[in-house]
Length: 221
Image (spheres, rainbow, N blue to C red):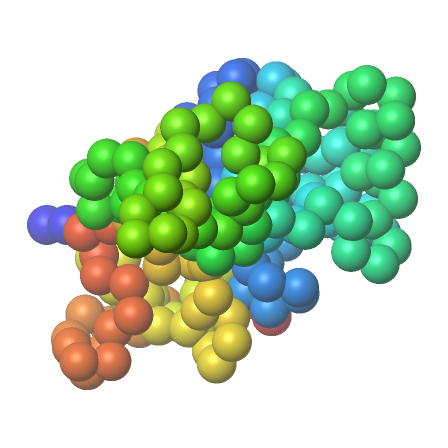
């Protein structure tokens, strides 16, 4: 019997080792798996590479990892949203490396990684510092930059409801980067508000299929 439900956050996170590449879903505050990220901070895993849309705000989420000096590198598109002082301090102190990726390029790199594709060309970033060291090409008079697919060891995502097979549904804008990060990771861990019986979810409304999710843990709102 397939049952991906974990009994606690710590049990769900226990497989993550030092040095792992961890994708963290969310856009702004929507869909951010705060409880999973804070559980990872409590575990004290070090030398992490974090892939996310931003680099955390205040002292929560990714900022909590930065404050404990657990992050070696961040790959994101928006490292300095309002109240991102944890990242600013860590970056100025040389504690964390930054790879800044345009938001659409980040999404497409994740999609390519999840789909098992190779490099692709995009006009975004051509002629800027973001293209330095990358292959470029001009096609029909338009400059393109070659970008690499992006894959991770683990993904931490937040959904609204899930079942024991790992099928997930999200609440409105909380969908954002979460589904594609599940696809692009080797092991996706989803925190959900509610676990529903198998067969309760309408198949056409499932937003992340269970084949892309390895662990589900219920976190009460």
